[in-house]
Length: 94
Image 1 (cartoon, one colour):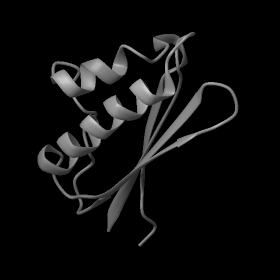
Image 2: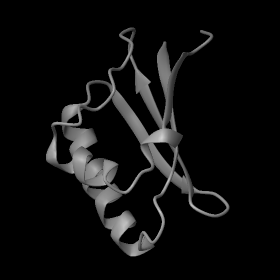
Image 3: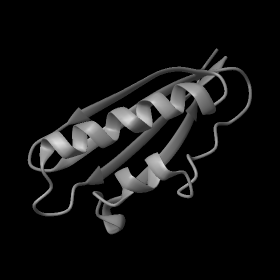
């Protein structure tokens, strides 16, 4: 049993992709240490400035969103258009 967390958002205008990648790596490292049952976290860029983050979790507890009070998460959130942000969690079928 496990969960899939999907996050989608648009980067704000003028964001440097290298800066985004560096901030995303910081969140990646933080996530593996502080998000219980995390199996894998993958970030993908779509057309334009669209971002998709897929995070897989094991276990039976619904994952909580990363808190914005965490420095790494807040630094990444600064690059996202808050109006475009969407998050959803899905439970495995088995």
